[in-house]
Length: 117
Ligand code: HEC
Image (cartoon, rainbow, N blue to C red; front, side, top):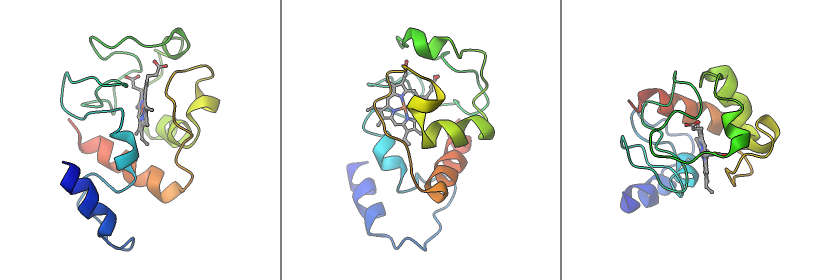
């Protein structure tokens, strides 16, 4: 997995990765999130996250701020805002991540999350 992240970084930016392979931008997420079911790290597992509601991963202790948004579905509209500006989208949440500044990275990560199920 570490080797994968390293080799992904060597791939030219113009290369379009197959949807099921993590895009380069997802390397930042991997510091805190695993994509295997039931494996929580600093952040909750992202397995099956697309299309589910926020704050539902078993065994993960969410912040109260995050749980205020538990009626929110993890869809394209939400992720487009949240991944670009986590703190602005859910004020006070404990995901210590500034956000993805490049919209292409946001779209690539969303496309990838759809396949993680
Ligand atoms: C420094 C660690 C860290 C990084 C980096 C990080 N996250 Fe998170 N993420 C968290 C934590 C912690 C939470 C839970 C927030 C809370 O409870 O306030 C979270 C929550 C989430 C959620 C909501 C999950 C749920 O079950 O409600 C999604 C989706 C998510 N992160 C996606 C990402 C993506 C995609 C990236 C990379 C672009 C990323 N995160 C980067 C720590 C991180």
